[in-house]
Length: 184
Image (tube, rainbow, N blue to C red; front, side):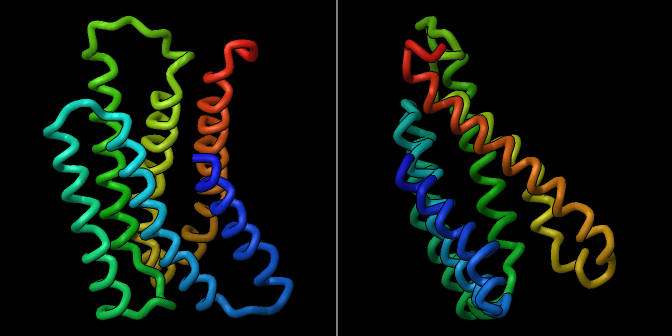
């Protein structure tokens, strides 16, 4: 997870600091984000698959790990191109991540073993993913429509999106800390 978060930081720094400073156009940023979306959804699904113990949800997650790259290739290379924004990919991936995270929380609550929530990193990561994708999926899924017909609203929602992003990464940070007994 730490390596994935480091890659995420590099992507965000490139897209929001380096590209504007070097006057690199937005379509290259879109291409970078489109590639990262594939990696992101695959990683989160793989992480949740490793954390889940029920075989039926593992089969569904495995199906997603096979199906999603095919959908991504069709959408990115056939539909609009890699330099275009793909809200359908975000909506599809976000929906499945929320479902897998909710299933994981259900399985955590369904176990007979008692564990303190403050000591379960997967709980906090699942909560972060649910909060982030429940808010981001409708926003990013309708981004093309909002930009075309309601640009002021699309721009004003960006700040809310950033706050939700920060909240998710704070919960991820807490998940790392809760593994260390002397911190909590």
